[in-house]
Each structure stands twice: as structure tokens, then as C-alpha cells.
Length: 103
Length: 210
Image 1 (cartoon, rainbow over the protein chains, first blue to last red):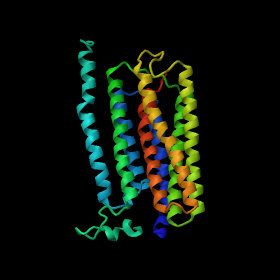
Image 2: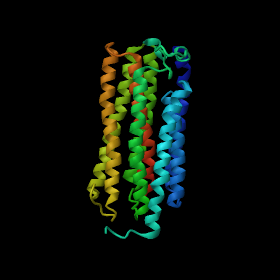
Image 3: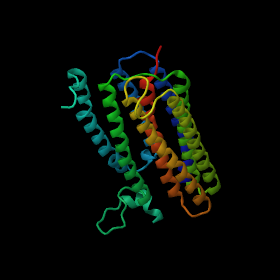
Image 4: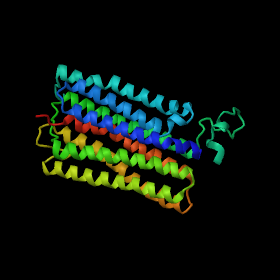
């Protein structure tokens, strides 16, 4: 265990540098003019990559049994997709048709 | 129980108990389950935020200084504290209690710096008239969603700092084992992970571009 952990230390530093680099890209993107939805997609894409890096390396999932990673990620991703798929499009309904006030 | 999180035990199938299908201890599995539920809380808030952001004329008031500089440095501090936490877990597994405690304290310090910077950032906004119920930019939900999401996250960081301090002292004195350090690390990395979504959603999407 300790020999294995020792070999991971340079890897963790590389992951940390990678996360900082992706954050820098995100900050630079914030200063380029994009449509909000394109901007949101790009920023969320980068954030999902960063989250995956944190979960795989810092939270050790890459070195645990695969079943643990699947058990925690499948319900999470499913619930988030339901929230995005059902509720988020409704925001555009208000934009397109307008809010008529409380009846 | 110490061998319960070795993978060899996990691969033994059987109905008689004593089998660890996930190859981790009960504390680590418990923390993972908590993280899943807490992640859903933040997901709901972030989806709700995206909803009101799209459905309203959303202001983009964050200047490069102070908001973006502060929040970027906060991101750097939080990511670095995750690295020191990994080193703490590493030292813990090697049985080096003093080194592990030192790295955990470094991580907690990162959390404290994050909170101090964030409170400064909040005070800038409050000074500009942004409150949970109103702001000078015209969309009242801007303040409400901002303080709810960043406030809940800051609460998690504050709880994390207290949690880490307890684990650092307990691990050094021999009260806790290396699994306890690892479990506290999972919580800390999760708090870091949430900020990886909050920072672009709340700050970078509302940057003032001249």
C-alpha cells in the first residue's frame, strides 16, 4: 500500500497542474464574447472534466473497485439528467411565451 | 475489520456475511453515500439557478477586480488544499501521524483562507447594494441565488475546516486511524469539486466584459 501510494505523489501533482490549467482556460473563456448557452455548455464541459479528474485521482475512485465508482456515479448522473431534461427546457418556455403573471 | 477494504476480500462471493462487495470500509462507503446525496442538493440548486438565469434578463456585474481576481485566487487555494489533503492521506497510510496531521492542518488553513477571501468578496457586493432580496442591477433573483449557492458552499467549507481540525488532532493522538483521514479527505475533495461548478456558473457566466 505504501509503495503504491508513494508512486502516486507525482501523479497527483500532475493532476493538480491539469486542474489549474483548465481553470485558467475557463477564466479566459469568460472574457471572450459567446452566446450564454454556448458559454454555459463550454464551461460545464470543462467543469465535468475537472470533476472527473478530482473523483478519479483525488477521491481515489480510479484505484478503488470499479463497482464503487459506478454505484455513486450512475444515480447521480441519472438524477442530474432528469433535472436538466425536464426542468431546464421549461426556462425557454418562459422566454419564448412570456410570463403571464399569477392568476 | 482492517482488511475489509482490501480488494481480495471483496472478490470472495458468499451469502454468509463478512464480504465487502465494494472493497472499502463502512466509513468510506457511508461518506460516499452522503456525498451522492449532497451532490444532488447542489445539483438541484445549480439547475434551479440555470433556470432562473435563462428565464430572466440576467445581470453581468462581476468586474475583473475584485470579483474575478478574488474568486480565481479562491479556486487556486481550494485546488491546492485538495493536493495537501491527498498528501495527508498518503502520509496517513504510511503511518506517519505527525506528517499527516501537518498536511491536514495545511488543508484546513487553505479552507480558512478561502472563507476569508469569500467573505471579503461578499462584503464588496453587499457594499454595492447586493442583498438576498435586491440589487441595483434589476433582477432580484440575482442576489437570492448568489447568496444561497455560495453561502451553502461556504457553510460546507466551514464545516470541513472544523472536521479537518478534529481529524488532525485525533489522528495525531492515535484516536483515529488512516481510514478516518481518508474519509475526511473525501469530504474535502467533494467541497472542492462543488466549487468547480459554482465558480464558472456564478462568477464566470456573469463576468462584466467591456
